[in-house]
Image (cartoon, rainbow over all chains, first blue to last red; front, side):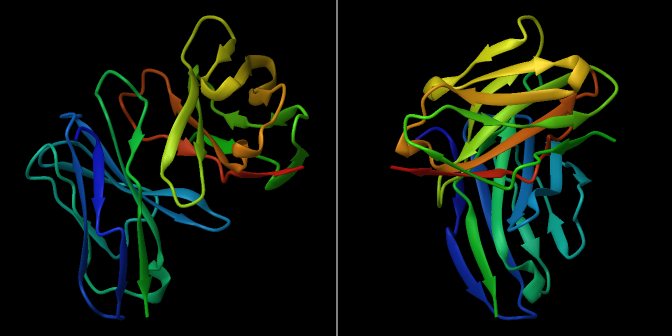
Length: 112
Length: 115
């Protein structure tokens, strides 16, 4: 089905482990974004990408790595997870000519 | 840098009552403005957006918002709230002619609806 999907939807991991959150969109949108949502902070941008092989930092990039080898995929990796990275992570995409962002369903990550 | 303020963290209204959620932005140039809604456990869905033209914008689910440049505001309204409107609402802004830079979101307003 067309749209934007995230996997896994739920993940529990231990401190120090590497974990990758996947994001896939079928619209061929140029832009993709990763946000984290925490109580009291709203949505904060982690990284975004304007096209394949082009990424840029957002407000809270520390501890995260992204890549974009294909237009449709934008994985987010926590290289060494910490408890402070427990959060709900949202991926979004938008087209170059339209600022509206389309959001995935989110991944709830718990770091123990 | 642009910023968005949603002064109300939590609002409770009775079903059938009117609703107004406040949003103020800080940006010198003409902004693009958005309202998103997030139901529990869900992603964000666009309610409406303002780019230019008529300052009163109609959205989905019976919502509307009015852009007031003099007050740097983009308040969301609904004349009669339904129980299914209980959700978190986010206002967002992006600067016009800034390229497709990321949206800046407010911290959200949680709406509770009581019978």
